[in-house]
Length: 301
Image (cartoon, rainbow, N blue to C red; front, side):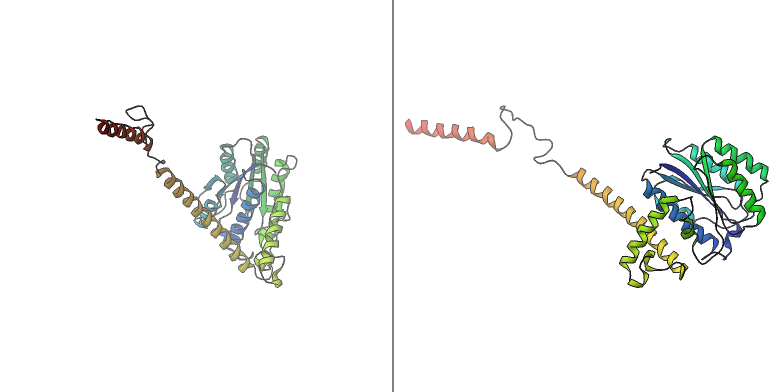
């Protein structure tokens, strides 16, 4: 599987408050981020994912590259919705974060969620796209929400200039009853990784639940009750992250206890006694024989 370092850029501008996507633009992004993390790390355990926002006063790195889902979820939870998006600056900062990755053998990828108007000029975006291509950084766009012609044209132009082989992709997702994450699975952004991951989870969920939900994750059809499906999925991931944290804490405690147990026989006991004999009960034997000899001599006298 491909070894990648992926920076996910979420759109936390005021436009993400809208509820035209289920359950809202912001919550739909949170669910998709969770799913992307799972797909990347399950495809290759050594792949890492980072998170940043591009709304408000300016872009902010929420979580550096990590393999810990808990850190990604924590970064999403403390993000505030405000201001407007800074697309070009966000991509530049994401590129710098990838440049400082620890494992240089990881391929570099940026996945950008955009649901608000794009204020940058097309020429500026073309220049940025060519710079990303020159540094071998793939840039994927998940466009939803504001799908006006000027927006999509700028994204298509960026995609055309940044493409390098099977690198960068553009997914345009219109409003609908399904979650963005469910529609994202079938796009080239995730390819086989997302499809196989969701398929395995769906089969497991259908087997554990009642027969009516067979084939759906947790036994719930996302198109029938998307809010419940999202709540169940996020609850499961948070519980999994909590259990992993507890297991690590228990392992650390167990290691500390093992280090405190002294070795059998004591650490400071010498191997030989003062007579040159092995330490322990073996030294008592010769002494007993000497005492017996003394008794015999006394009887003879």
